[in-house]
Amino acid sequence: MAPVPPGVRLLASFNKDQWYRALTFFLTFLLYTSFHLSRKPISIVKSELHKNCSASGGQEPSSLLLRPDMDCSWKPFDKKNYKELLGTMDYSFLCAYAVGMYFSGIIGERLPIRLYLTVGMLSSGLFTCLFGMGYIYNIHSLSFYIFVQVANGLVQTTGWPSVVTCIGNWFGKGRRGLIMGLWNSHTSVGNILGSLIAAYWVSSNWGLSFIIPGLIIMAMGVVCFLFLIEHPNDLRSIHAQNLPPGVQSGCDTELLLPQDDARIPLQPVMVVKSGAEPSAISFMGALRIPGVVEFSLCLLFAKLVSYTFLFWLPLYITKAAHLDAKRAGDLSTLFDVGGIVGGVLAGVISDKLGKRATTCAVMLLLAAPTLYGFSMISQFGLGPTIGMLLVSGALVNGPYALITTAVSADLGTHKSLKGNARALSTVTAIIDGTGSVGAALGPLLAGLLSSYGWDKVFYMLMAADFFALLLLLRLVTNEMTSSKSGPISPVELKKH
Image (cartoon, rainbow, N blue to C red; front, side):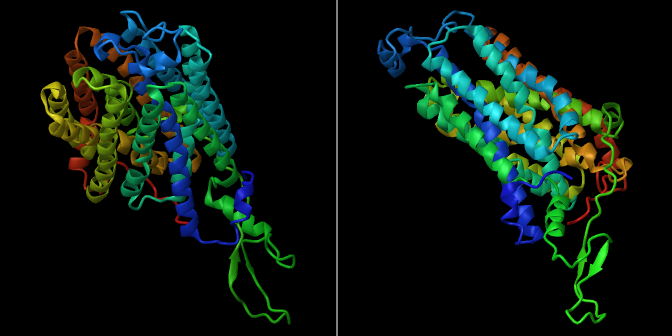
């Protein structure tokens, strides 16, 4: 049994299952919001690392006035190959994240999730702050920034398998799409907050664009240590420990007797036996679960598109719409607002129809022409641009959100696992790890292709959506021909 978080003991007297579910929902929401909040600054700061000073009419940026010893652009990103260098930084983070994710889920199933997640958040905050220190200490070594990105990518893998496992432990299959669609909006909320924080400091001191988010995720790591409840059984163990001295806890059901020892049964108290812990599933065992391979490969291409927008959208708006870094960062948050709507919409529709793969396929089919329209952003006015950002965000992030949350939880509790909830972390890590391969390739390819024109980047994104759609066709066909209500046959987690 996992150790009881110290902050939870104070709350243990309020033994209301719904209350604790709500606590777990909002706490894990805030925890992963801080993860994405700390990832976003690099996309905002890119336009400051390399900027066209002549475009400002000869006026020096405020950061240059504060630091007269530096050139207009931040070395080594002041050369013509700056897009490739920026793409390399993205690739360093995302490649480390993709590789580490495959191991993170396996490790997480064998360690207390609360401690594992806390260490990861504290470490991620440290490396995020370290990147910002590059500005304060005038560091211009590319290897320094790549090292920080790689290290941060590795420790950030502790987040996703941990929070998905916690939320899966507390919520059964009923309305899982809606619940996780709402919960998964932490991705977009984190991106929005990260953009706003980074944009506030980017023109005056871009180091603070990293340091502030780094401190936030470290603070949330402390909150995680104090209050995160991994599983409802952990909560029951607290109440078992708090039973009156005269009450025995060795059997499954004990009766509380009155003082006169009369044999009148009163309210039964359920005491959970520790029992033998189920064994963690192997990597190959998780791959044999029906649907894991198809959804993992689909997510590879879906996440390629999503993360290309995450890391390159502000810079693209800066160039295409001729806006400064702050305004471009603020405008890019509309894409994440659309992502929130898309994630919730995908969850509600898939719950209603019982068809996860079909819901994803329809949104992927609509996303490709929408991306083509988005590529014409420089020809639109502000109003149409806002509309395209919202619609594109919904269609791009809808399938990504559904696969990484409700689908992962469904597959992690598949009937073939016979109720072994310890498989959830590994299944989640495999799906998100495979998706992270695409997340690593997307920004790297965007950095290379943008040198030949931004239209080439959008052709790449449309092709990725097409391949994601193809990979779901078999599952879509099964859903259409099956008399069952869902694409897979998960067992409902025990309602606590």
